[in-house]
Image (tube, rainbow, N blue to C red; front, side):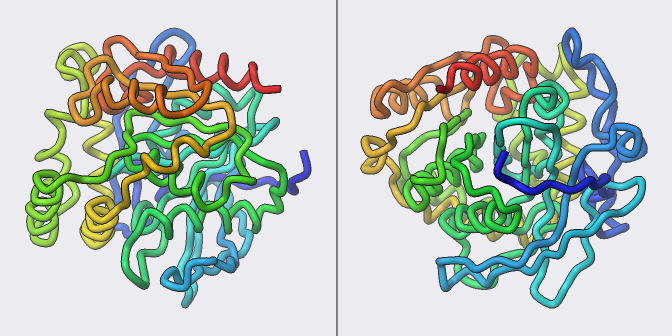
Length: 345
């Protein structure tokens, strides 16, 4: 590895909590499958797990609309990524495991907490970096017009701060997939591989933009818990509430910890994101496309279109999963990731 790495602990804003005591949520125990059948999402458990985590970083961002957050490396005993707020803001992230770098970008309206089943399952072979995108977790909000491009530039700046110069595998789910596609357009030389989960290349059409506007109006007057209540029926497979109810509760808790201002800004960024289809043919790195069989928001047809447009892309359909396939079926999701990553030359 060409990157420098220091020992860090974990943070109360990670995995379902919030830096604001009034918003702190303790996620429930989620029964994972097989080897992942262990407790996660509970802040009390993190000290024992001792992940490498979170710091604040100074960045030079190529997008003038994105005021670069300031981050200094800090460690806090017993908590993950508990960053002090500086005048310029913070970006929080987990940094777990050893090996080739895998960056994971979370869905809306969640946080890096959603990736815990992945770093628990893959940290033996990979160094997993999972940031809170702008306005989520304890990360700084937007200072200019919200955009997925700004989020993508934040990821590049974070890699700079961590002195990760070599190309990385980058994955994103849903909103994280939109950011990953923006990263591929803006920073193609920094990619070793691309993972697109439960996402699509299309921009919002008129109906989707109108739906975003309605949710923006709702989010301005309500909490993250209220917002996720509106979304949950389409976020998970029909079988998940009955077969894996604690996954649903964890999703509620992570979303409930998010600030309404961050939710609103992200909705604006999603509504206004560009059509990514024209750039798909230029993607020249190995690409894995994942989708839940029961994904109602970005159905398998969207993933099939991505596979067809990206040279050599591989498609894996996760049975028994909806839009949050990494949480609903972590074992097959992780197996697909591991198989893909092991095949990189």
